[in-house]
Amino acid sequence: MAINAARMETSSNARFARRPWPVVAGEAVGAARPGDDFAALEAIGTRVSCGRNETLFEEGDSAKYCYRLVSGSVRLCTLLADGRRQIADFFLPGDFLGIVDFGVHAFNAEAITNVVAIRYARNQVDALCETDARLRRRISQHLHEQLSASQAHIVLLGRQTVRERIASFLVRMSGRLDLDMGKGGEIELPMSPLDIADNLGLTIETVCRAISELKRADVISVPSTHRIVLHKLSKLRGLASGAEFVGV
Amino acid sequence: MAINAARMETSSNARFARRPWPVVAGEAVGAARPGDDFAALEAIGTRVSCGRNETLFEEGDSAKYCYRLVSGSVRLCTLLADGRRQIADFFLPGDFLGIVDFGVHAFNAEAITNVVAIRYARNQVDALCETDARLRRRISQHLHEQLSASQAHIVLLGRQTVRERIASFLVRMSGRLDLDMGKGGEIELPMSPLDIADNLGLTIETVCRAISELKRADVISVPSTHRIVLHKLSKLRGLASGAEFVGV
DNA sequence: CGGCTTTTTGAGACGCGTCAATGACCGTGG
DNA sequence: CCACGGTCATTGACGCGTCTCAAAAAGCCG
Image 1 (cartoon, each protein chain N blue to C red):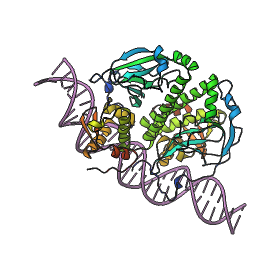
Image 2 (image 1 turned 180 degrees about the vertical axis):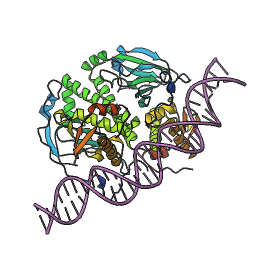
Image 3 (image 1 turned 90 degrees about the horizontal axis):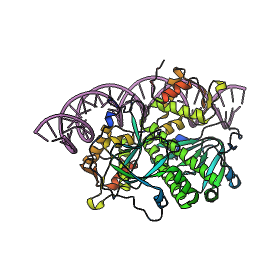
Image 4 (image 1 turned 120 degrees about the vertical axis):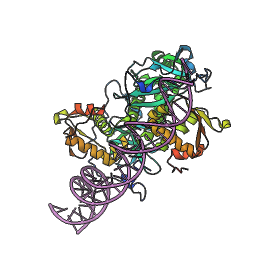
């Protein structure tokens, strides 16, 4: 077995045990973006919350519900029989998840941080869709976005080098989180390096090395775990699309 | 640059030049599966055809049309700046393609063989959807299937070994093409080993070696290029999900 | 402060990509 | 119909990049 099988297994999954994490403020998003919103769903939602490393739903669960994140982050992942893990995607405050699955969930949705979400019953959503063309379009658009992100990820995993993957990841995240240029382009990543590795098809060691390399080249700096300052976003964009890396 | 960049470039893309291929009979599918069909679209379709290695649409084209394949096969692919290629998926007779793209196509759709397809104008499809709940559900289901296939592919590319990828590929194709158990499980693959490599995130050499290995272990045999006999489908399924390979 | 978990760095192994040569296949043209 | 040329498939030898294993450093919490 070659690719990043779990290193040590005692009971369930020691490799992915809990670790501490600051509680994220609740007012993050959830608020309606005017116009292109899921506003029609408001009436049928239930507020739920979920602690760090607990699951919103699991692979094999019937897909009765879908969710919109109010605060906190979620990873959508699956485990192979021998412990190898792949994270299909991350979800951030404001993101919708779970509509994608048909009948049965194909992945686990695990809270990376404490999570507050609004839960919607699928059959109610479907019923609303029958009459509400606006909601229909919004959900359809969501599916298209997910698909397009998945396909981009296929290209990344199939054909991009380590450096391109890391650079792409940082650029994508800087677009999804608010990149604070007032602070020189600082972002706060909710996920650990291990999560990043399992999203990008790498090992944690390889991710660390690539990040260290970027630090040495002054493209980024990492004041604390989970905080990354992107000094040269344009350089990162270049690296993401195949530009040669010039180290120190 | 590490991963499978193009080997030699003179003009456009010598690596993907044409090669001969038997014309596939036209009566392949296109016929309605009863019940869950795109029947409502029949009135607005136009028959188009497209020669081997020509494109149905290209990356960047505005996504005005979507297509249903009557006969022939298509690859959905993209080229990175330096010639690396990734094939996101293959489409076979009966398959729908292009609805996935929103606004602009993100990939090239290239005919692997001569292709006959029915082309539908997106705005007409959308208009029909407004009134036809059945069609809406069918298209929504299609999006869900595509998404689920993409996510499975992400797992394959991110975490599976060469052997698992090849086995998964063969198993999947045996399910999509008709696997003729009368002939001992023979399938006819429309795509070349190079296409397979670019779909699975490998090089053609690695694909060849993995296939040779399966031949040596009598799991498959390859009477001619594009024809593969799956002797031990159950063993392939095992390999696809991580079972140890026992060579000769 | 002390113990734990996670991250980081280093050394070595191995798988897969690269390069190169041979062989098979196909279409073309004599 | 067969010989020729070109493309693609296949196999081998080798090197590089990423994984593996291991140990040290850094966070985090009691």
